Image (cartoon, rainbow, N blue to C red; front, side, top):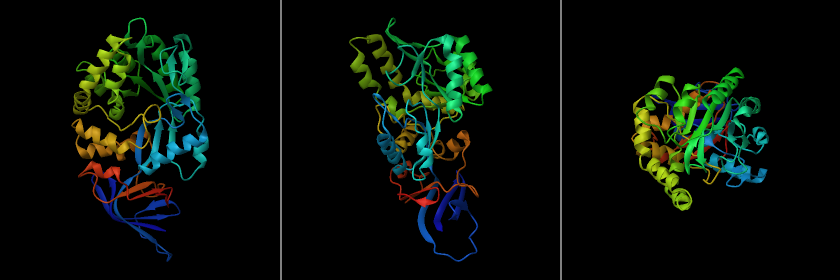
Length: 358
């Protein structure tokens, strides 16, 4: 039996003094039976959420199981116990059988336009095949499908949309028919409105949001996962591609320069914002605390930034937090992360499925 004592943050303003773990489950009622109890003191949060992460992927494509395990363990040590895997070419279903590894909600493999994404990452197809591939990944995933909404067009030398509106509308409708939500990688401005009007549920990165499209997102309830720790790499990417694609490089720099203003404007308009790191491509795993800090730097209040990686994110993904009878997936900290989000970077204890794993 495990006893969490101190401050248990069951919700943004729902603070309990005690939580017990019995049979791997949360209870707020002290068990009557007498048995050995391990006590952990501190401030407890539900296990953190990285809503844009890639287990089984690195900069070159799919990785082996040993590397996937290392990635998942790195996330776990950072307090990330629930991952929305936003596209991976590797089969990571074996992780579901490991009680010591985070839970994963998969979006299947990326679906991209031919020669319009990173090599070895995605199914690369043409618009006439989009509905079929979305249906395939909807069946393979855990309730999500991931599209590549825009990428560099070699003919224009800049970011541009990948899909005709009719094709993407039909594909999103098919995903919804099969019970899956759809998200899309989008850096640029022009891809956003057609995707939202087609019924998309979420946009990754969303650096191209403007005062014209933000109200549309808010009206339709389309969430964004800004991945600001990844957007920080835009100047480096621009420098690397400037000689060949100067127009694209300039565009990437401008998107980077206004990244905080973009996120804050979306938040102020009521657009749902969630924490995601984009770990697993070129970025390291275990950066969830840094991403929360980036949201605060953008001007999002600390409580809402924490919620974007905790209570709010779990509700959005349909997974329980610290509720009676739920699996005991939680992280314990020295101090209140609502007062200083930097606390999230140093977990005292990590509890997964009722066991102290770190």
